[in-house]
Structures are given as structure tokens and as C-alpha cells.
Image 1: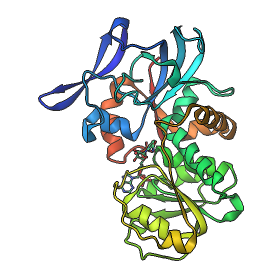
Image 2 (image 1 turned 90 degrees about the horizontal axis):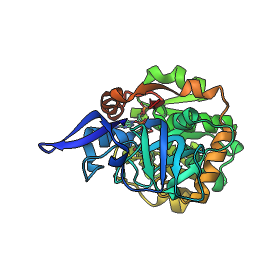
Image 3 (image 1 turned 60 degrees about the vertical axis):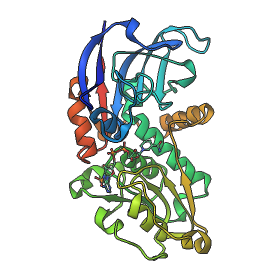
Image 4 (image 1 turned 60 degrees about the horizontal axis):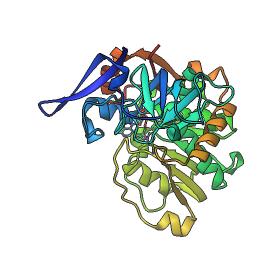
Amino acid sequence: MFKALLLNQVEGKTHAEVRRLNIDDLPEGDVLVDVAYSSLNYKDGLAVTGTGKIIRSFPMVPGIDFAGTVAESASERFKPGDQVILTGWGVGERHWGGYAQKARVKADWLVPMPKGLDAKQAMIIGTAGFTAMLCVMALEESGVKPDSGKVLVTGAAGGVGSVSVLLLSQLGYHVVAVSGRPETQDFLTALGAKEFIAREVMSKPAHPLESQNWAGAVDVVGGSTLARVLAEMQYGGTVAACGLAGGFELNTTVMPFILRNVGLRGVDSVSCPQERRIRTWERLAAELPASAYADLGCAIALEEVPQAATDILAGRIQGRMLVNLN
Ligand code: NDP
């Protein structure tokens, strides 16, 4: 028997409850993992609260990421005792996920734990941090260098935002953080942010072209914020867009693209190819100093997930939230 957070539909509403389950209850898969840690991401908030129709079949164990130890494996790629990480692939959405002490999944979805990381650190990073690294790599691949100019991070005090601030500042970029919470300035300064802009300033409607402020940007907000970020990009700058915390629409013009050579890179973590995943996790292990993990977030128990899910949707979570399954 093991503990899991189980979602069910009761009178059309999503109901979350911690239950004891049997190994036989788990879905099919070729690797059984003893989960040590999962984490709370924005999408988990949507799933656990039943907002946004993330989950379509019930009962479901949510949790879009986890890290732990292989207990059984029918795949040649993994053997019992191996440390593994899983993010994305629809786990915690269509296939039972990480909010359980055990998970059975496809070997193809697992990434070997990179040298220098443990399960706790991997889930302090989690899907949000993995996505942050993908965004940083997208900027690098587009030629945005530390001496190209300032880089902007929106939704900076959240999961993707805070890891982006940390990674970019570790890599030598001058990071400007956009946040709706002035009280997070000390937190963001500790992660390396050099300047701050209030959320309402960046979400104001923009002219097709504004003054050229940013060599690069990581945007988790979308909507009018992304439109303004595009209008404020320097000639040849690139925006890595990965989120919709402020809205999924994008009303903009072609001007930044055709007059300033601005690039808009979409970033997806869910179906990211395996080879890029492995490289991204290795980069994370290499770039993040051991001392940074303590600054990034805090841990909660499985029983605390439903409240935390409400909090993340309300924008009340600072940094990353780890879910301890030990
Ligand atoms: P968090 O809730 O941790 O962070 C989001 C942050 O955005 C908040 O902390 C807040 O930052 C800001 N924010 C929230 N609501 C608004 C609003 N209405 N207007 C402007 N800013 C707002 O979520 P995550 O970091 O886990 O995810 C961020 C986004 O990235 C989500 O949309 C998520 O779906 C997406 N995402 C996409 C992935 C992909 O593969 N493409 C993978 C992971 C996440 P502050 O308080 O500092 O203003």
C-alpha cells in the first residue's frame, strides 16, 4: 500500500483526497518508481482545483513531475536503484503522476538523474525550472549574450520566473525582474535580479514600437505583457515565451519583427525531445550552485497540496514548492 492524492469528479466538481492505494491500482508502464519528491507547478494548480479542464478522465493521480528511485524495470534502459526524473509527457494529466509514493510509467518518459543532482534538488527545479532552462537555452541559441544588453523576466517571483532569474544571473546577464509583488524584491535580489519593474507597468497597452530596452526576455505571462515586451525589444533581440499566467491572447503588430528583427521563440517542456531533455538537465546540474536550492522554495506534504494548488493560481506562491513523498 502507498499514499496518493486522488482526484475524482463529484457532481461535476473536482474533489482531491489523500488515499491509500495498491500497486495493482497503478496504470500500465514498464518502470515502477519509488517517488521521493514531486513539485507544484501552475498546471498542477489548474488540475487539482479542476480549473481549466487539464484532466479529462477520473480517478487521476495528478503531479506533472517527480523524482525518485527505480523499484522495478522491464526496460533495458533502467535497473532497480537508478535515480530518475520525469517531467511532462502528459503525466499527471492523462497518466497517473507524481503526487503518490509510487508511479508506474513508460521508460521513454524518464531521464537519468544527472551527476551532481539529487531527487530533492531535481524537484526544487521541477517542470518550472526545466522550462526556465529551455527558455535560457532558446535565448542563447538566438545569440543573446550577457553583453548584448539587459534581459527581462516576467512573472519573476513564480516558479519559471524565479529559476530564470537565478540561471540568467549565474550566467552573467543583467536581469530585470517584473513582478506584481513588491514584497518579493529581497527574494529576487538574492537570486540575482538587478532591477525591478512593477507588473502593471509592463501590462499597459503598448505602441507598436516602444523604446528599445531588452536584448532578451523570458515571458511566462502572455497577453498584454508579452505584447509590450515585444514592442520594447532591442534590434535583433529574442523573447522566449512559455506561459499564459496573465492570458493566452496576443494582440500585437508585425512591427517588432519586420523593423527590429525581433525573434519570438515558443518554448514547450511537455513534448521536448529526449536528447534535448537530457542536455537541459545536465545544464541545470552544471549551472545551479548547491547554495541556490535553499533560496528557491519550500517543501509541503501531500495533504497540503490542495490548499497550495489554490494559492498558486492566486499568485501567492513565491519561487518553487516541493512536495515531499518520503
Ligand atoms: P507560478 O504561478 O509559479 O508563476 C507565475 C507568475 O506569474 C506568478 O508568480 C506571478 O508572478 C505572475 N502572474 C500570475 N498571474 C498574473 C497575471 N494575471 N498577470 C501578470 N502576471 C501574473 O507558475 P509557473 O512558474 O509554474 O508557470 C508560469 C507559466 O508558465 C504558467 O502559465 C504555466 O502554465 C507556464 N508553463 C509553461 C510550460 C511550458 O512547457 N510551456 C512549463 C511550465 C510552466 P509575480 O507575482 O512575480 O508577478
